[in-house]
Length: 183
Image (cartoon, rainbow, N blue to C red; front, side):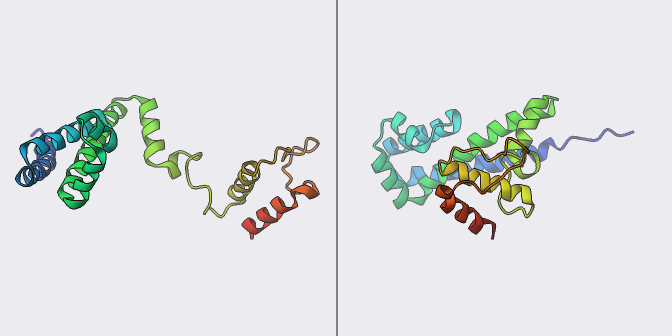
């Protein structure tokens, strides 16, 4: 029986393609800018990919003026390309670590990953609430609407435990708005 080889060469090639793309972008920047500016861009890129700072925070940490950085980014799209690649690199590294833990039988991490990645399938609280044609979603949207408008009266009849929408005359505009939503 011949043992199957794991496709590690393919994974290495994917990482190499990504790294190659980053290196090519860095070379383009080095061809355009002075060595001092290249250092600034590399510091910003490092802060984004290694610590997860936002672009603005990374620029501030690098000691460069953010407005000037934005100008350079607009004038030279390769700078935005580097920032985007480094942001993806950070996300990719974190997701790789989280996925590894989830696959090593960490059920809580696996559950969180599924809920975050596929909210409509695994996280009913964050999934789409409007757009579903079931009555429960519409009622939940109506209750949410009434709550957001500042109405503090109870929506549940204390006698029957059923939800009711018609309340007092002073809330008639809210009722009209709900009826418009439901039509």
